[in-house]
Image: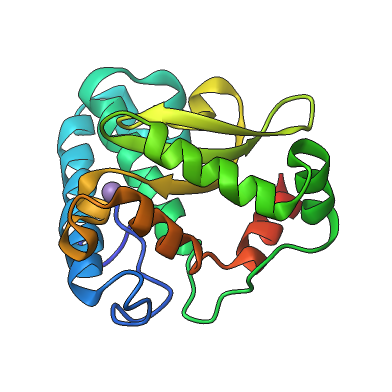
Length: 199
Ligand code: MN
């Protein structure tokens, strides 16, 4: 529950809407968080009303639903996870166990960055690029079209980059590569370390 009184809601941003500019402008955040994400939440609440999903967690819905309920639940979850990874004062690189896992899977943090950004431009149409941990403990990069979410495939999500046009079109127009490279610089690796420690 939140101030809307609804079960499912966009999480409050952990920074001011202007805090990530110019990488992500206040206008983009106000639309992306305040309009797009809020609409996924409102739609999900509407769709699950009077269904068995109304009493389930959003993670359970993502694992078990289909169609519009799945799409809106996954988009809400993805956006809450996405916005929470940024900071106005980000830690620029990971350390400790996460850094070791990245080096083992990709060779280096710079190599991870290059591969993630490559997938962001390679993904055709709308979707997400995810850094996940698979069931054998190895890190992987996943391209997920549309509302794709790793929980659906028993993968543990660590980081997602939104490549839907609504994530960047106000600030970068069609220049997706420039957008994701700039968004990358606002990822707070202290937060990703915390996620990795909780898996
Ligand atoms: Mn989005």
